[in-house]
Length: 381
Image (cartoon, rainbow, N blue to C red):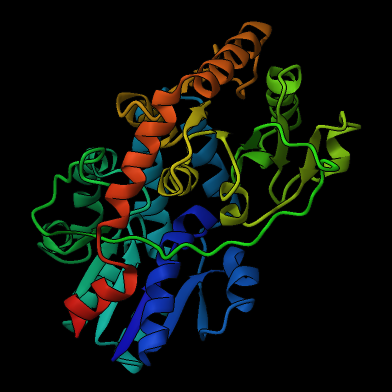
C-alpha cells in the first residue's frame, strides 16, 4: 500500500504523524511525506522519502500570525485556521500535493488536522483520506465551520467529506470525547533512555520545564523561561529546562546547580523519571506527560494551549496558571504575581498524590487503546 502523509510547518503538527508513519513503514508500505521547507531538517533525519511543498509568503503569514496573537485566544485561532492554515497554506501546498496524488497515486492520505491541501487533492483523485489529531477534538470542532468556505471553493462538498472522514486521536475518551462520528484512538509505544546525571547524584523530584518548539521565537521567550525557573528555583527539586531550537542555554545566563538547561532532550527520556511537567499546554507535551502518567502545571500562551490547560485541570491531572497579559496585544510575559502563583501551583501538584494518581489513570486508559501499528492494520489491512 502507498500512504501519503502531509503536514503544515510546525513540529507539533508533524510529530503526531510519526507513530503512524513508523507503523506503515514497519508493515512494508511505501510511505511518502509532503511538508513545507521548515520541516526539512526533521524529514531529512528520518528514513522515509519526502517532498517539500510550498509555503505562503513570509510577510503574509507573519501578518496573520501577528493579528492572531493580538486577539483573544479563540478569535486568534479563528484567524489562523481560516486565513493561515486554510487560505494561504492550502494554496501554497496544493500544487505539490496534487502532483503527488496524480503521479504517485497513493492508496491512502493521512494528514494532520490543519493540513487541508491533501484533502482537496485526495478528493479530486478519488483517494481515501483520514485526519490525525494534533489538538483536542472539542478544540478542533470549534474551528471546523471556518474551513467550509475555504475548501468548498476548491469543489462542492469537500468540507463535508473532510468532517465525515476518519479522525485518529491519541487523547483518552474520558478527557476528550470526540465530536466526530468516525473516531479511532491509538497510543504510541513508549521508547526512552536514561537521562545523564546532570545533578551529581541528587535525588530530589525532577521537574521538567518546557515551552515546546515554537515559543522560543517569541520576543519575550527568555523572560518567560527565566520566570519559570524563578517560580521553582527555591523548591527542593531538580530542574531540567529545555528551550527549543530558537534559544540556547547561553541565552538564559548562569543557573543554580539544581537547574540544568538543554536546547532539546527527547521528551520520552525526560518523562521516564519526571515528577512534574511545567509547560505551555501544547498538545504534544500534554499528551506525552499524560501518557507517561506525569501531572502538569500549564502556563498557556496561545493557540490550543488554553483549551488544553482546561482539559488538564478538569481531569484532575494538574493545574493551570494563566499569565495576566495572555491574549493581549503585547507578547505574553510573566509578572511577579504570575511567578508566585506558578510556584504555589508547582508545590501543590507535587505535594498532593491525587494529581499523579489521576495522571496515571489516564495513562492506563491511553495504553488500553490500540497501538499505532494495530490501528493501521485494523483500519487499512
